[in-house]
Length: 222
Length: 417
Image (cartoon, rainbow over all chains, first blue to last red; front, side, top):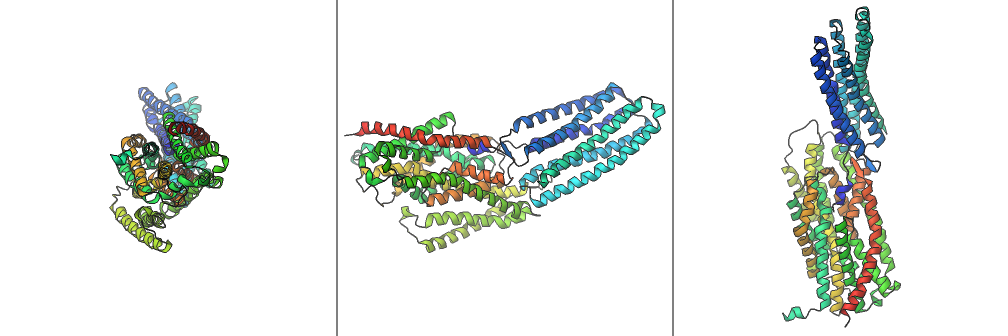
């Protein structure tokens, strides 16, 4: 008979944070994947892909749970539509990571020595952006706790600006990696196209993380 | 045994039904008022029972008289009703509200005892006696207050939450801020309870204070409360600083404040809802004793005590189960939200009790929680629950009225000499 208890529905904030956590965990697997590709160990690549598949699947399940547990009749602190958009971007982080792992495994791609340094440093920079995105989503419960108070909003806004800077830096890294790739394209032949695709997809992860931040910023401004 | 034999049958039935009502209020209703405190971890189940037991009784005994008077004689024009009609009617009202309560808990519907008793009294008055017998002005005032009380609680909750937001949560050092502001809230709660109880209250103790005396007493009580607040807040173990949950420490202090507001809401609930069981009993008792029906004679303290005891017994025999179920579910309402909602609801209910208006505790709390939600303070609110509550609110009145008409003729057939 506790109606107040029923009135207060399950907040989607914690599951949103959990989802971002899993998505970024998935993206983090890109580094060991690239390292396995560098040593040419196909077995290890397959293992990394299995782990990425597992995490992507976990993220998917959390996403479905959030979607089915936030009906329209809920009155929420975060605008429902915007929140679901953010969720989509978060989910894409895991999806794109999965695409990379899939291609790496199917084509048994080996990372050429000349590309190793620029691609790994691109990946590291991208992960820094993803982790910043995660830190921002981790602030969601603090935002609600303060009722979107001015100073907390300012704090998150600053974090989003930092994410923007990190993403800009990945652009430079992407440029460097692509130039290095095209400088050895004669040698790589058709593999060039696929490496170009992998590099671009890695950079996309930072892009998605930035979109998470930007969408949240729109929500804070409203 | 000669004394017991001297009590007429009507009074026995009334006392039995009233005790049942009080028991049911304690068994079902109190969990609504206290549930948020248990769910947020501010109180353990037995802590909540203890708090509720003490403050429900105090509320009923010290501040329950005004609403009881309204239920007893405010809603009907007693000049048009003869003694027997009043007895049958009040018995019917108790039986009707009691039946509704059983049905409601059987089917899990949010039925308010307040609404059922008011619907029942209007029902037998209007149909069994006559439309003119109902004091429609008073009824309009009561029904209007059912709309305004959740609204008022919502507005107050909105502002209390804004205060905690601007003065505490969204500051550089929330812990230091709540240490300063916490005792002020303690003062406020004790002051309000004091004022409501002391000003022309305390009739059970034969004390009748005027406004200035009551104000002085309330300020003194508030000061004692503030002191208690300083002491309790100082004792809170803050726990480690957690960068991922920066508000965990300040929420721990809000736990103390939520215990305070849990006491306040128990007091408020007792002061308003005891009337649902004791009001009709008092009417029957006065009629049986051959007193002037519309008399100014106050509700006797022993009746309020019976109501209070009934609520406490209901709490102890059944209410703890409901509370345990609530306690097992982790509520998303953090102590700071529970505090804001309960403080505003308690204030609203206590004001209504002082004005002698019977309102629904649950509805008032729902209004308060929605107020915090409108300030973007709560992750998600399930508005379907609001719809359900409004729907059962609308349905309760006619059902209670029809049942009460039925029971009226039943008791008339049973008791007519």
